[in-house]
Image (tube, rainbow, N blue to C red; front, side, top):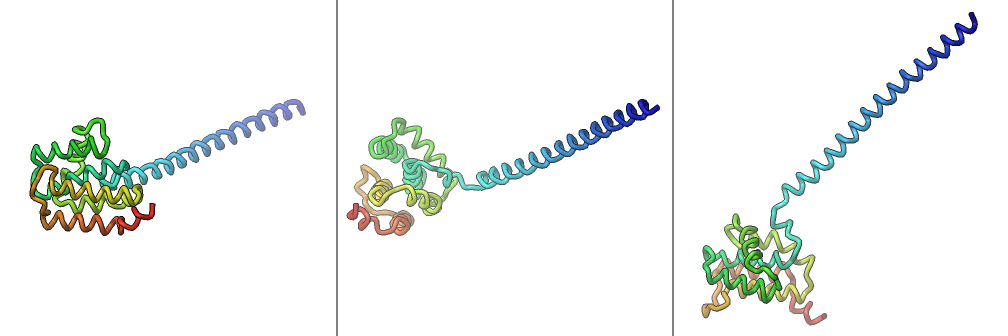
Length: 184
């Protein structure tokens, strides 16, 4: 009889361990589900944050940002003409050193397609340009933007009021670049 009790107690111990192991496995499944839920919530948060960022603020290449700003300031006079697009392609190739200037101009036009005025584009791009460019580069950016506003072949050297304001805001946001270029 004592052998039967020993076998029954051994079997009940094994059953107890199996039941406990099932509870442990179930608890681990719940924890991993919760961890996946937390990981998913974090991914959703960062995705929403990036999705809610304005597309102009996602531009990392300063050359691309400058080209978009040039398109915006040229659009202040109205829709871009074929001559203005040719000027942009010229500057993209010879001043910004793009191998595919026509494609980059199309991309810049796409970036600013919804903007009515260049000041809004400048607002979105100035922080990245200030952070990523030296004083000499910022002075060159001001020169390029002013050239774009006037036009490459144009004898008319006057800027519209909106263009003049945007250039003035660009100079203000970049700080006194004339002093910074003399320091380097």
